[in-house]
Image (cartoon, rainbow, N blue to C red):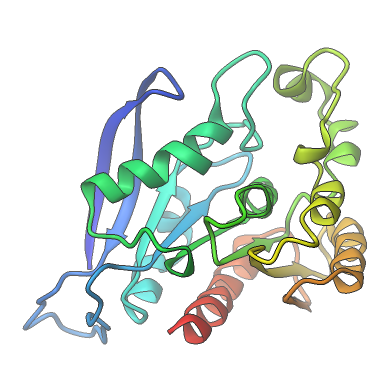
Length: 256
C-alpha cells in the first residue's frame, strides 16, 4: 500500500486543504508480512470520516486501517471535516458540498479510482457516522453502502447539548432542515431504488446507544438493506477499531 498526504485547493472551502489516502501498490515484491489484493483495474474507494474532536489523521493513528484496507485492495480517503457535522455551515465553510460532491471528483481526477456507484462507499464514527449516513442517503446514486459507528443519530437531541457550536452550523435558531435529520432523511429516501445499503454498530455502554436504537427501529420498519450490530463497548477506539474491520468485511466481501 502507498500512503499519501494529498494537499490541494478546494473551491467549496475556498482554501487549501488536505486528505490522507491509502491506496494499493500494483507491485510490492519483497514486502514482508503483508497479504494484499491488487487485481483491480480501477480501485474501489471508501471515504472514511472522523469524529468531532479529531481530524483526518485519526484513523491512521488509532487503527491499522492501512493494513485492513490492503486485504481488500481498496483505496481509503480520509478528509478533514473540522467540527462541521459534515454540513454547509450557516457561518462558515461548505463542508457538505466539499466532502459529498467536490472531493470524490478530485480523487478521481488525481487517482485511479472507480467512478461507479457500486465501487464507492462511505463510513465514519460519531459525528462522522452521522455524516456518512447523511451523505450516502442524500447522494443516492453515488454510494453503494454507508456505515455509521456510534453515530450521532438524533441530531436535534444532540444540538441541545452543543448550542454554541450548532448555532454556527445552522444559525441562531438552530433550525435543522429535514435533509440534515437522519430520521426524516431515511423516510424521504425510502422509495428510492438506488438508496445505499446501511450498516450501524454501537456499544451497549455508549452514551449514544439509545438514539441509535431509535434509528435502528426506523430502518427496520422501512425498506432498506439494513445491518445492525452491537456488543459491549463504549464511545471508544477499542470499539471502533474492532468494528471498522467488520465494516470492511460487510462492504467489500459482498461487493466483490
